[in-house]
Image: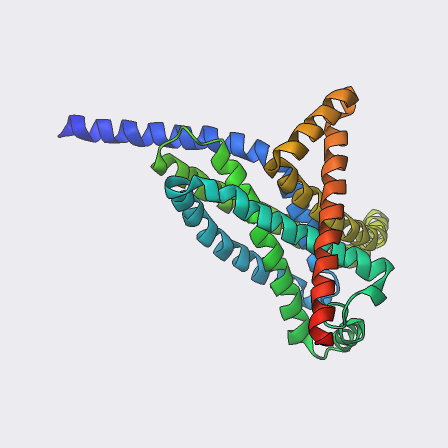
Length: 304
């Protein structure tokens, strides 16, 4: 019996060692997506009252955990019974990201092109003004939370699928434990950083109230830096939609994938940058096409 127990401990140690190795490899593979995830989620919190920012981040983080509770078992099941479905599902998610990015770009530069229900700017502005006065807080928060959780679902799906791709030779138990570890670590890491980012201005105010000059100077620096960082993350979040969505599409279509690889090879040391730009252009074009189709269908329905 003692021998059997030792063998069990040895098996558990082996599995945990495999999980550790696979988790490290998967973390490296998904590092780029994590950067996009961070930018997108920090962007989603902009416009929320300062005293409610952490509550919104926590709500989105809980939604992200739920997303992964759905995605991890679903990915394991699909990989076991219908592995061919993973790529089409991922492609749909990529198209949706590109669509959302294109909608944001058109909203910024040509809002009149969007149907009223896609570009209800007056209602959105009214919600922002009401929020600034302490009114209609629930409506604005729910809008932000739903949008962030929806985007997180797509990015989480990509993280899960990429992670699953480096575990093809692993057993089901090792895959499950590795994916669960990745899901927990990345959710805590991303939303912990988002919480820190959105509270930079509060940290600046706190430091400015200190008596020593260094703290006050640092506080003023944080207050000046925080809005610039949020503006940067808002822009980076939109760009990330095209990079991630376009990257999914490029890797899912052989012709585009080979073309991206050829361009990267021609670029030499700038191969990574060239491939990223290619993904972004494909994402932008695909998003604009989907948006144009969507607008056309909406107009036909309203005219009928």
